[in-house]
Length: 118
Image 1 (cartoon, rainbow, N blue to C red):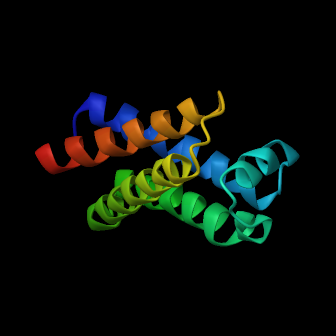
Image 2: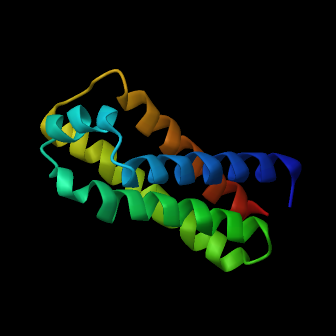
């Protein structure tokens, strides 16, 4: 494992785990984003929060030696964030916070790409 891969994967793991925990804690700042793309608030804990937290934990597991779990988590996070941005595109809803979804997607793609190269 390269140092660059470890840094990118660790950042992706921490950010996704934190975002997942924030979603499961039902942070009020997230509600306008859900409303804007017409996603039910009931989805905030499951599937949204659970999937982000599971992805973060999976990346951490990959860094700790369970490489296939880390790869699967990276694939899952790429799919999750692509779907999130696609949902924004369908709703034509682009608040300033949307750049975060792009940043999360970039981290997931970077982690997956570097994982497959190593």
